[in-house]
Image 1 (spheres, one colour):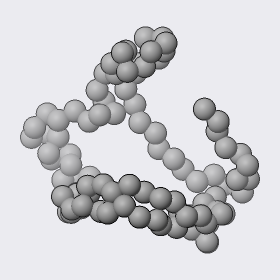
Image 2 (cartoon, rainbow, N blue to C red):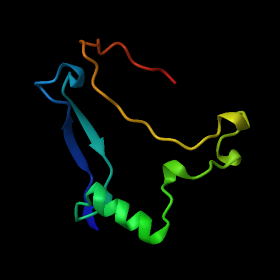
Image 3 (cartoon, rainbow, N blue to C red):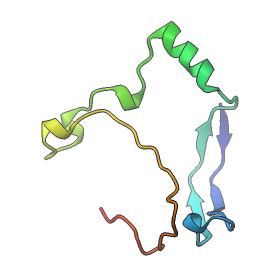
Image 4 (tube, helix red, strand yellow):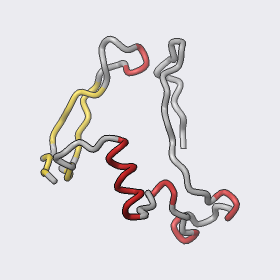
Length: 94
């Protein structure tokens, strides 16, 4: 693993409508794997070790107070670009 120090980077992509406006974002330092892993390599690792990803593990109810147990299911999200322009005002509020 390699240490990536804290700093500012420009988030967004000028040529993609759904990633504008470009803006500066501060990121704390973090560790990152130094070597890329392909899907095939990861599949071989999972097969050899029986590894269960975080997205597949049961959720701990104590970590989600007030959430009905039937909603505590493992999962992950995949984001896909829409086929149309989306306003930057169209933001999900938690």
